Length: 68
Image 1 (cartoon, rainbow, N blue to C red):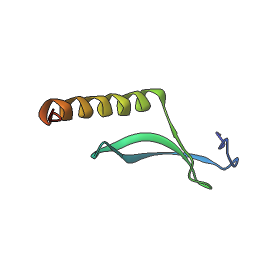
Image 2 (image 1 turned 30 degrees about the horizontal axis):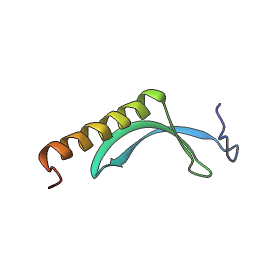
Image 3 (image 1 turned 180 degrees about the vertical axis):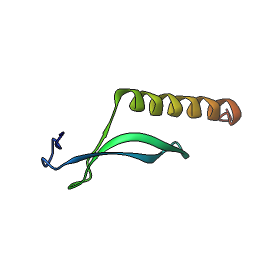
Image 4 (image 1 turned 90 degrees about the horizontal axis):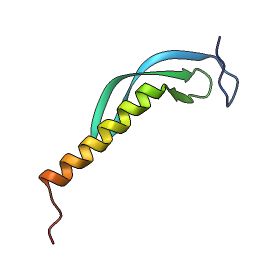
């Protein structure tokens, strides 16, 4: 059984929603400490969230350019 690095509590697997740049991403698989709530992301989940953030920001720049 995994334990939390912060408080040594029990770690549970669950899916959460994450807001990135005003966009809600649902059903992200994570591990969460049942005692302190510390959230642990897998490398693939973190990479996915980063890619979504980059995509959203690039589309915002394309669609809503800053006037000169």
